[in-house]
Image (cartoon, rainbow, N blue to C red):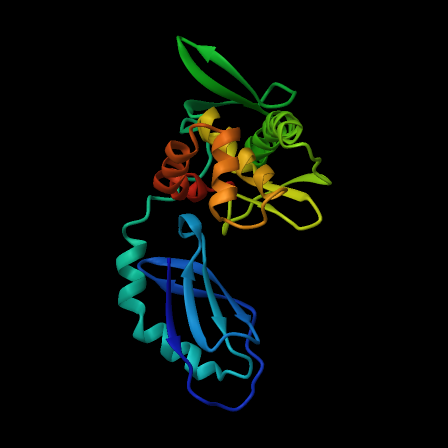
Amino acid sequence: MAFGIFRTPGRKTSLPQERTHAVAGRTLPLRIVENERARRLTLRIEAGGRGLRITVPPGLRQGEVESFLDRHRGWLEERLVRLPDRPQVRPGIKIPVRGKPHRIVHEPGARGLARTDMQDGEPVLIVNGDRRHLPRRVADFLKREAKRDIEALVARHTAKVGCKARSVRFRDTTSRWGSCTSEGNLSFCWRIMMAPPPVIDYLVAHEVAHLKEMNHGPRFWKLCRELCPETDKCKAWLKRNGSALQAIGFD
């Protein structure tokens, strides 16, 4: 979600690129990005409410940014209160793994990688080691699962379209779930492993389709639906639920 306003002329100054902004009872990271092609200030809430981003024309005064934020505080507050709470990964809470809620069980005295299991008929994610490292260990688990599942899906879908990906990478991105460069490099947000398997398959099919069609035109969507017949359903699911997955904190 974003809000924009046209700029007013001002003298050139150097704006801070990173800062924080307090709004709606939260203190959020605020990124200020200068763009030579920008003709106005644009404010965007990152997925899951994890931060704010302002795109500004070059040479904008700091005061104009502050005034812009003050004028649109109500807009920000209205949208931030609608976002899901940002639960922090900790023992006892449930996070989805391939769409199924798993309760996090901490076993500090044990060693080894995090793993899924069943306890009393309930899916659990068992995490060993020091409590301080539990969020990172859960994130590492999702990254490993993403690498295994998504690389297999990339191989399957690229075989169908008759081309190869130059590389497959995994990041914790907030602005998009996946991307494909003109050189054939695919990138995926590892948080997608919390979504149901058909949604994971759709995301991979979407990015692989870009290897043939670097756009979102009719031919692209036709190819995407050929690779993943549930494209429309999965696309809608990700739009409805993606912010909740992005909101989970692995700090």
